[in-house]
Structure formats: C-alpha cells, structure tokens
Image 1 (spheres, rainbow, N blue to C red):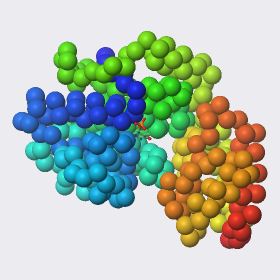
Image 2 (cartoon, helix red, strand yellow):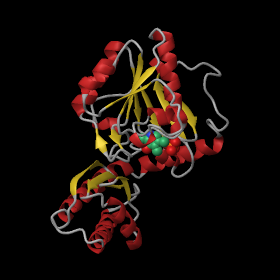
Image 3 (cartoon, rainbow, N blue to C red):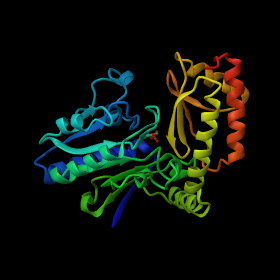
Image 4 (cartoon, rainbow, N blue to C red):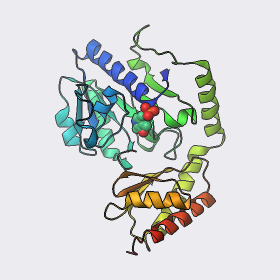
Length: 304
Ligand SMILES: *Cc1c(COP(=O)(O)O)cnc(C)c1O
C-alpha cells in the first residue's frame, strides 16, 4: 500500500521525505541521519533542500548549511558506495536531473543503488518533482528502469499550475505518527480537487504516451537541425529534452528565441533545456524547430 502526504511546493514534499528518512534512521538504523545526494542535483529552495541540492553556486549562499547531506557524482556507483556509512539513512536522487541540464541516471547504476539500499536498509528517495506525471513519456520516470523507489516526491505538473505537491511512501516506511508532519494547506480541499482533476486528465488524454511520441519526434527534428547548426549532445526522455551549444552561447539563444516567440531556458551556460507542455503535438514541434532555427540564424551560430 502507498501512503501520501500532500503539501504546496516540491521543496516541502522533499523536506517530508528527508524527515521520514531521518525518522527511519532514528528508529531502525541506530540514529543514522545522513542522506547521500548527487552533485548537479536540484531538490528545492528551503534551507535543507538547498543543502541537499548539489549546485556549486549555492555552496556558500545563506550559510551555515543544514548538515547531513553528502554529494557524489551521478552514474559513479563506486563513489556512492564509498559514501555509505553507518550514518546513512537514505539516498535521494532525480532519475533525470532537470535543473542540472537533463542528465539521466544509467539503468545499471540505479539497479546497483537499489540493491545497496536493500542490503543496508537504506531508504531510496526518488525526486520526480520535474520528471513525474508524464513528463518523460511514462507516468513516472522510474518506469523506464526496472527499479522501484521506497519514497517518491511529486510537484510541478501534479497541480497543473496550482501549488500542490506530494510525498508518497510504501507502507514499509509509513513511519509518521500523528503530529510528526503537517501544514496549514496539507491536503486542503481545493488543492485535492485540482490535483485529482489534473491526474485524471493526464491519464484520460494519454499525455504520458503522447509525450513519448512527440518527444522522439522532437529529437529526430533536433538531429536534423544539428546537421546545419552546432547543436550537440541532444538528449532527454519524453518532453524533457536538452542539447548543448558552443562557447556559452545558451543565454543569447534563450534571449533571441524569446524575441522569436519561443520560450526555452538555459540551465547551464552551454545547455538549452526544452520542456514543451505535455499537450504539445508534432506540429507544435515543427513550429518550435522553425523558431529555434530562426533564432540560431539571427545570433549567427555558424553551421558546423
Ligand atoms: C522544481 C523542483 C523542486 C522544487 O520544487 P518547488 O515547488 O520549487 O519547491 C525540487 N526538485 C526538483 C527535481 C525540481 O525540479
């Protein structure tokens, strides 16, 4: 069985997951409280989630940091394994790092982490605030992998624009008792009605399946564009896509695209991320490519 805690923002859902992990550590792992997360990760903007986040620019912002978070590089199981100690209560990661520039975890890496969590009784928290609810072409990104998380967090798309988030746990980790966690807007009726309607529509319209189809179409169109313009490392799943551009030109491409009427963003100086709405169609992709090509030509990004 799955138990849920509802909140208003993704950061709060992750905070709840961390509290649950610390409770697990206190009850079952002799007081273990450390959580292993990834460099380049993004988990939110509360003080604890800024500490969980592996963003170099935040290392000295709003010090002192909340202790208990260790960062290891993505897809390096040896580094993760070396970081596990008697203090570890959880491993927390995004399956596709969104703010980090659209970097997916490898299946073998995730499977090894799952195994280590099982062997040592460590909780596996998967942050699907960006990847959840159809974004990657499946309802949940973990469905791309043969791995199930113990605890899952959702946000962003779950409210369809309304502030709503959720932490889900398997009954094995259903450890909160009355009063352990809460909030003024936790499970408030308006949010619940909106979330229910949004999830029903995503399922009814088959938006996850559509994101998979439209996403592969977008990748093929970006690859065509890459024959003429210097786009490289085209990557992503479903409608969470990215590519690299040379010499830190991402910000000027974002600005020029805005002029052309296309909203994109640059999570890194040389990386462009594309997150079209889940209702986007192939003809929307054609329009996106047309505007992108115009922007690339206008900023004079030379043919490769
Ligand atoms: C956006 C995001 C968050 C934070 O969500 P907020 O609603 O801004 O607090 C956490 N994790 C991931 C992966 C996100 O993309």
